[in-house]
Length: 248
Ligand SMILES: NC(=O)c1ccc[n+]([C@@H]2O[C@H](COP(=O)([O-])OP(=O)(O)OC[C@H]3O[C@@H](n4cnc5c(N)ncnc54)[C@H](OP(=O)(O)O)[C@@H]3O)[C@@H](O)[C@H]2O)c1
Image 1 (cartoon, protein in one colour):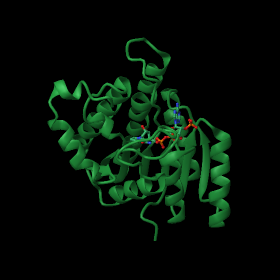
Image 2 (cartoon, helix red, strand yellow):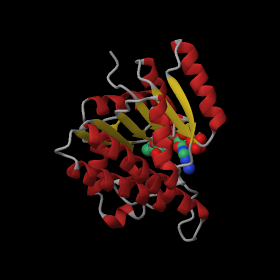
Image 3 (cartoon, protein in one colour):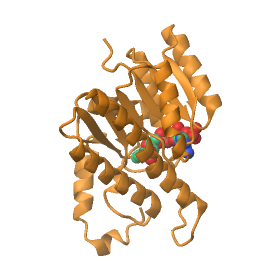
Image 4 (cartoon, protein in one colour):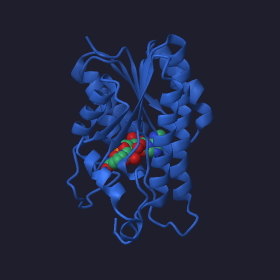
């Protein structure tokens, strides 16, 4: 028996979102895959459906920055998958590091990582509260736990997303709708490319499995892998004058 009746993965054309969609389908959950690169989404769905022998995966093109399209698109998805009880928001971009300048990349990151997240998560919450159940998973990041010199706008969007999810969890605590905040550390996907990182990056597949386990147990906040939690606790203790000098 699959754990979920139907799922939507926003940002499923690569990386963690793709791995989550594949894992869900492998466990028998009908899943809608969303992203801008529709050819990739179509290819992934064809591959998933060929492996499962059923039309378990459905492709949808979406640019999350067009937040006004969210309601209509959600309705189209539920025509295909009538009972959606899981939404995973995995869409995200990390802009180039140019904090001193006003760059389109900064706005893009705010719209993708935050505005789009709020639009999709709000839509799911409206549908889930009507039925009194459902789970929303937001893929935030350890990057939102402490400001660093590396990527100010990315850090800020993830901090805002984490606080938004925390607030939503408080608001929905008596409704039967779960809100799960997932905070990955480094994961080997296009977003970090081939950059050498320390601690070593997890695979997208293991991050996906950890994310779905957190959703299944209704965790409030899950670090992925778990050992990022003590690392973040230590990072919070680093005095600001030292933190400001760290080249990360
Ligand atoms: N990799 C890491 O080390 C790491 C660490 C912490 C958190 N995260 C977070 O994990 C999430 C997934 O990232 P990833 O690592 O799997 O990177 P990725 O492979 O680059 O995946 C990013 C996904 O976001 C989608 N996306 C980006 N802009 C979009 C838009 N405007 N509309 C719709 N979809 C959009 C992309 O699809 P299209 O390009 O097809 O639209 C893609 O499916 C992100 O939120 C990221 O911030 C990653």
